[in-house]
Each structure stands twice: as structure tokens, then as C-alpha cells.
Length: 478
Image (cartoon, one colour):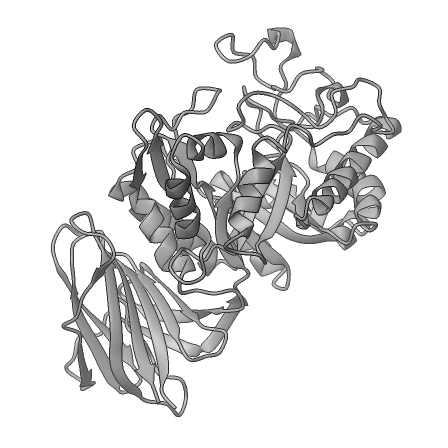
């Protein structure tokens, strides 16, 4: 029986290495995307026996298994669904297939959503703005039925087993000490009085027991309501960017106060739902802040994983070293400034390498779809995988679409991250669940063609990659 090894490369080329007792038979396919041409079928791959004089750029070690991969995806946001509804139904179907279809699309398997408003909502809202409703009698997901639920259900048509996790950017405003969704005052974007602004490491949530209990109930009601809609929420992260004081929906927490909320209220309440509780999303590099919660004997027993984004990339390595069996996630890729260019894709490749090399089990893109402006309602212009010009219906697939597709289409859930070593460090390697393929991503950031040499046991794979290209190679094994 023939087996295959799959390789992805971004600029560099990726080459396989043998599983013990197996041999390479052929290179069966090579898909390349570059600024000049995307998703191009290429050939001219040379396979030779290694000798001592050969150049070797890196070697792949499929027997050196690291973390299992849970999957890849993006975030369902209101503005994304609005953009999709500006195009013809057949165009919308094609976009959704390109993201989620298991035959031709990105095969996204795990995605994020907000609980209430985030910065890419149409405007501020929560699921219960009735002040003093501690029993959550007025809790409602009616707003979500306009955009988020249709968006997710449209994706489920092509990925019925799609896993969805959620996090709040902000609790209902009456649960905060400033009674407002924002933390930073800016007259251009919100009406928060300056005297009501928050600061980092000062909790904005009202820490009285009745407020904490009500908020835990809010989480449970969200999970139960979505399950009634046919959308099982497999996990919640307790707070998006718990340290960041923003002009858009946000809520700062001290680690010690999150311990109280998780250990005494949210953890026990979520036990009733069987949904996982994750500590996230962490956007600061201080190991100590995260460790306060992970080392707490009460709250830590409820925490199933940690999500990292932005400057949180500075903490993931230390957390992985201290807690090697804990699940980790890159929860939101850095969004750029709306350039949607190949430089942004190559920067994101570097983020992928960092997070996956430091134990991340999943990698999340941020906005899968936006309109041509890329702007949030709070003034930030950001990148997206796909851009839609509302006035004309033109759909553009940006470079990061191809980067994500070449990762998620080949690296399936239950694949393993594996070790590689060599002078070409911008590579990421995986072993498929059935152990019949190696998947290797490589980034060539050079402006010229690059000859790549990868050692595969006693053989050498050689190919010439285009400048700034993304490549996927599949190599047969016997």
C-alpha cells in the first residue's frame, strides 16, 4: 500500500522525512501560492540519495511527536455576516464553501464567537441589559438570531461537526462598576465619561456575590440557548483580553478576582453544562499573571486550557513548560491594519510558527470576512481572509486566505506537530492522524527564487520555490 507525506511551504519549500521502516516513492503533488499566482500546481521536484557533500537546509523527524492538533478556524462576527449578505446568494455559498467545505475549502474545524458585542459587532449590546436582573429572567439571544446564528448555521451546512467556542468582550454593562461597555473614554467612539475610565490590573467587574452569581448564570444560559439552536458551544473563555482597557467593549480583571469568579461561581455553574472552561484570552506576556490562576487549587481544577493572543505570545512558552499537559490555543491572530498583503501573510506565518512551536493545539484567524473598508464600528481598520466590496459585489481572496487554507486543508484535527531542525528555521511540520502524511510549512521571505534541500532519512528532496510563495507538497511513502 502506498502512503503519502504532505508538505506546506511559504516561500521556502518543505521536504519530508521517512517514518521508521518506510521509504519515499514519489512526490505526488505540489501546490504553490505567490504574489504572482495563487493555488498553482507545480512540478520539477528532485528526489536523490543523500551524500556527505549535499546541502541540507533542514530535516524533519516524524517520530518526534509533539502536541496533537485540535484544528484551525476563525471568528464569527456580525460585520462579517453583514458583508456576506451584500453579495448574491450563490456568491455567499461559494465563500462559505471556500472556508468550510471538506472537499475543496479550508476545512475549518474550530471557530470562535463573541458572547454579546465585540469590536466587530454592528454596535454595543449584551444578552441582558436589564439592570438588577440577577436571575437573568430577561436574558435573550434574539439579537444573535439576526446575524451570528445564521452565520454559524450557514457554516454548519458544510461542516456539521464544527466546534464553536465563545468569549465575552464585556459583561452586561450593569455588572461593571462604571455601568458602561467601554473602559477607555474617547468622544469619537463612545460616551464614557473620563472619570469613569478604568486602568489595567484594576477589576472593573462588581465583585459582590450577587453580581458574580448572576454573571455565571449568564454564561450558562448562553450555552443552553445556543444548544437549543443546534449550536453546541464546546468551551468558553472567561474574558477576552482581561488586561486591556479599550474604547470598545472590554472589562479588566485582576487575576486574583478572576480566581474568585472561576473557582466559586463560573466553574461550578459550567459543570451543569459539560462545556469546557478556558482561561483566556491572555494578551500580556507576564507568566506570573497567568500562573496565579493556574496554580490556584480551587480555580485551576476547572480550567481545561489557556488561550493566547497578541502580546500573550510572550507567555505561552513558559506556560507550556510549566504545564506541559495543559491544552493551549492561539485564540486570535494579529489583525494588521487592513493592508491585506503578502507581508501580512508572512508575518502571520511567523506567528503560526511561534505558537505551534510552543504547544498550541489550535490556531484562530480573526475576521474571516469583512467589507472592503475592514473597519470596526470603533475605528480600527483590520485585515481579513476575504474582502467584499458591498457596492459592486466583488469578492477578493486575500493572501492570508491562502496561508490559512494551506495549513488547515492539510493539517487535520488529531494530527501531531513534529520536530524539525536545520538552518532554515521558518518551517512548521506535522504528521497526519493516520501517519500516512507529513505536512510541512515553510516560509521563504526572500525576493528571489530559493532552492531548498530537505533531508529525508537517506534521501534529499530538492525544489525551487518562487519568491514569497506558499507551497504544499505531498510525498508518497511505502
